[in-house]
Image (tube, rainbow, N blue to C red; front, top):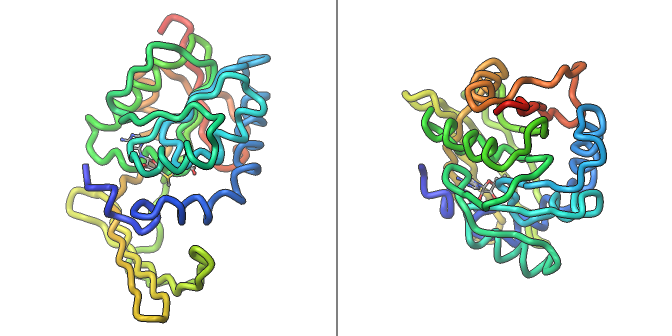
Length: 239
Ligand SMILES: C[S@@+](CC[C@H](N)C(=O)[O-])C[C@H]1O[C@@H](n2cnc3c(N)ncnc32)[C@H](O)[C@@H]1O
């Protein structure tokens, strides 16, 4: 896997990540809770957030699910989560190998965290982790990249980063192995320019469902579109 810690300004400076994403967390957590209400388990009390970042969504989920645990690969993200949200249980771990020794009724992996699994064996290992931590008939919720963005088009936007305005310039290309490469430049206008190069995998819904099926999950009978673009899978009771 790529050296994620240096791939993006928001991972090099997890405080920036928190600042830019905290506001969206209540809405995302509400979407997750809505899907759990649709597909069960009824009266779920436990949730595992895999790739939880700085813990903003977990913090919201913890208001609904009394036993809430988060896992993230990057120590910097876990550190910010622990500092900002000391009441949360957030641990360092790799979604391919983490084994917490307990099961949860709801397992979530959102915010494109799964997209960092580039090779088939990485995706398979991540799904094995999801299965290992999900109760039979439990729900797995995934929000990841399922479509390619427009390749070769450069997009510009203005972002507020740590109280400073930055011009963000983004373009995408596809590597020979099919991985999506995001090249992003942050120009703070005072001489500071930051470069990101992020490699991720796009998993169309059919492929995502195949990986889920191989790990013992079947797609929930969702009406389209799912709230928040979340894909829901139910773990087989025999798995
Ligand atoms: C864009 S952030 C999303 C964070 C959070 N889920 C959210 O929606 O705000 C993606 C997260 O996935 C984490 N991640 C990437 N690869 C991982 C792995 N192998 N195991 C656990 N977490 C991973 C990154 O460290 C990062 O915090």
